[in-house]
Length: 161
Image (cartoon, rainbow, N blue to C red; front, top):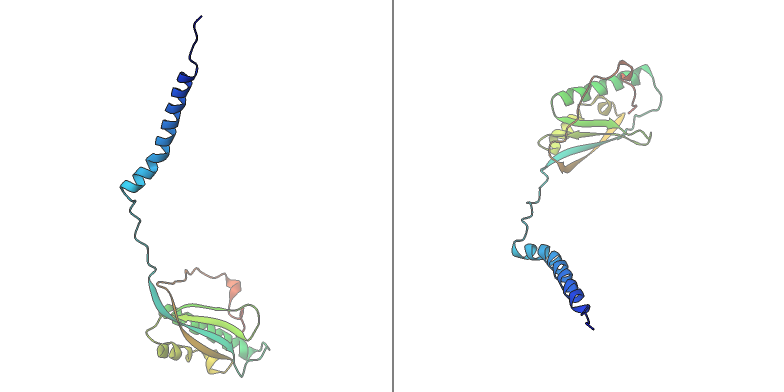
């Protein structure tokens, strides 16, 4: 009677499968050790100083809407448009919660004094309806606003300073 050795064949197969699995696991580690991957240089955000004006209710602010306050608001918005076209005022807008802080201006100019002088040209500031608190602000370079024609129903008077 002949006996067959069952285990040697099975052990050889198991050894072959184990070797293949270990080789597959070791390949990525060997590659990583041999040549570390070059990481891209970290990007740096370009920064610049802007001047942010917080516009608060002034001593002469009133909640009433009168022909005089409407004209003042129209002049305020015209001044914003002028400063924007000059490229000095890059962002402006009201806060919508009807609190004492009414809005902001963000200027791209050379100094705090220049930003203050521009704030002083605002008719609502001159009239005492608004007062300004100005701060240097360091942020990403090139902040801009994309403009488009406004619908005719968004004329002056939407925001009350």
